[in-house]
Amino acid sequence: MASSTKRACDACHRRKVRCNGQQSCGNCLQAGLACTYDAIPQKKGPKGSRAKVISELRLREGQKKAEHRRQDSYFGHGSPTSSPSSPTLPTLLNQDLIDGCTDFYFANMYPTMPILHKEQIWRLVVNMDSSIEAYCLLCVFCAFMLIQPSIETKAGQAIKTLERSLSNNTSLGKTLLDGALRRRKAYDYIEKPSVSAVITSFFAFGCFFGLDKHNTAWFHLREATTLAQTIGMQDEKTYVSVDSAESARMRRLFWLLFVTERAYALQKHRPLTLHATIELPSATEDASMSIAGFLHLVNLYRPFDDTFIGLWNKSRTDCSTLWLAHLQKQLTQALPPALDCTETQAADLKTSQNWLRTIVWQLAITNGFLSSTASDSSMTFTYPIEIAKDLVAITSQLSQQSMEVHGIGLIEKLFDVAWTLTDVISCVPLESPSFGVSPQDYLNHLVHLISTLRGGDSRYLQLVMAKISDTLPQHMAASMITQPVVPVKAEPSPETPLLHHLDSGS
Image (cartoon, rainbow, N blue to C red; front, side, top):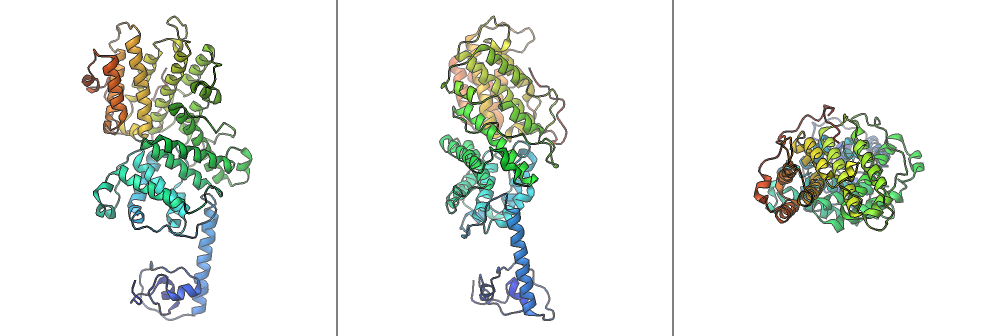
């Protein structure tokens, strides 16, 4: 900026003193005031007491900083001294992008991961110029919204001036993610962890999961759970020393990590670090939206403890038919007949439920516990057909958008069910259906879903098509994605009505 200007900074204008127009100007530096040029110029008025004005300015700044320190107790332990300036990232992280990601999160993602509030995101925006921790969390949050759900967002006029490689949501998300992780090294969030650091690591995991970089994803998930344990989130005593609002947010964050770690442990054969050591959050603690669906999700994954993961990872051998049959019964009854939740929650819950039933069945066949004459259908070779039937019935009632928002994780679960069903069709003699819908029809529907979600742009479509081509040569791969059993709804249902019409399945 030039050494002088016709416009004075806000503080000099308020004090009626000459301003050199620099950032920061000499007067503000000498008085210890923030030097800004935000105020809209007003008509000149009578001069007042300069000493009184400067005292007033200092008082206002002190009150603002004190309020921010009080509010930021949830997000960290103070602001770093350096400012996250960058020639590229501030341009990318514009207000339109932040607003678009925030609106999408609360409209679609919040019921499944209720760990942020609008006021908290507003505080991040307020503090992002002075707090690297707030800045990094905001960047990674937006990156997650761009990469994992792959939302359509208006990124603002500034984005249009950037190179074309950043016009893609995923490319934009990767740029924000990489920049935030580089900037994060500027403060010691490991030695002085905060809830903000836990959330940042969680969203970083989600980004790398969506990018199919699973070693890095696992690193950041383990980082998130380690930071959570470091600040005592696994200990009920921790929640006594904080106010009720912060306690509720921390409790929901812990259980979200609990669910995420178990799902990832099953998908990638990883060990567990978190256990059910604290109370569940209350279903009515959030006045803005019921988290009943979130609690259902926690209950779905609670049975998958160290014992099951040990068996799944083949570090234990103490498995039994009765135990697995009981677990299948638990999963079948885990969700109520009438789901009191949004459509996006129902998509996640129902897909996860049937995927977990498939996982348990896979463990049963691995241990040689299945029989064609078993009285319990879950212990028979054809049980995956029943699972696929239930999953097709549910997904046929859901809009595509309600499934899209869950990203690649939901597609991978559909893929696992379709893969298992393909094996059953190829290996087990099946009777011709008397009702007109065959297991091949269920497979057709699942493959059609995989080919439709996110435009079929995932490696899972190619994998399942290759599997079908190899094991079911009589069913040409090209014919598998023509039409689903029941057309998938193109438009989303309203999120506000409760999905009491959704049947609980098996």
